[in-house]
Length: 178
Image (cartoon, rainbow, N blue to C red; front, side):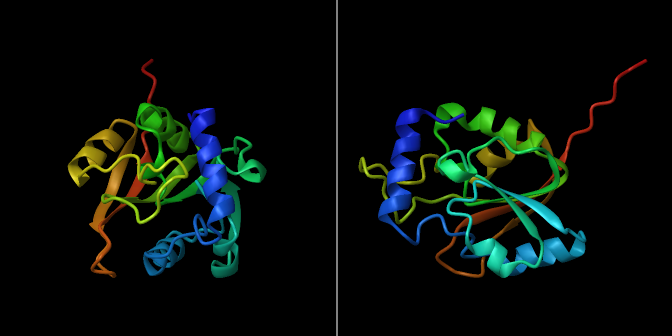
């Protein structure tokens, strides 16, 4: 789901930039409302980066997962709810479908997902833009529909410079025929 070369790029970026990968900078009110509305007490932060900010902000148990951060890289057990903010656009294009399948396999109820649809301010140590996938909303929606039901679609407008797709996903339930 991630190449060793790219993992090394992300590890280096985490070391070089103390502010990069520190948690959701926008949408925190939406995230808090979603947590409150769903009575969430335990959540998996999928693609948590440094994994430091959310435990200080949210009064719930946070489980961290990030394949590019050694202390959070162990494959997590499934949980009821997943938070995945500003992550999917950082995935290598050839791995996006396997990452989506993996993410969806980690929640049994819902996921709150934000995806930036513009280039990042940050660049990787090798000079590439940190957002490896910059696609419009329709592209993301059609891709995600393959793996999960989309309960709601919104766009972040709190910051006029943001162009984030905000989704709430539910697991697809497979019913075996008799």
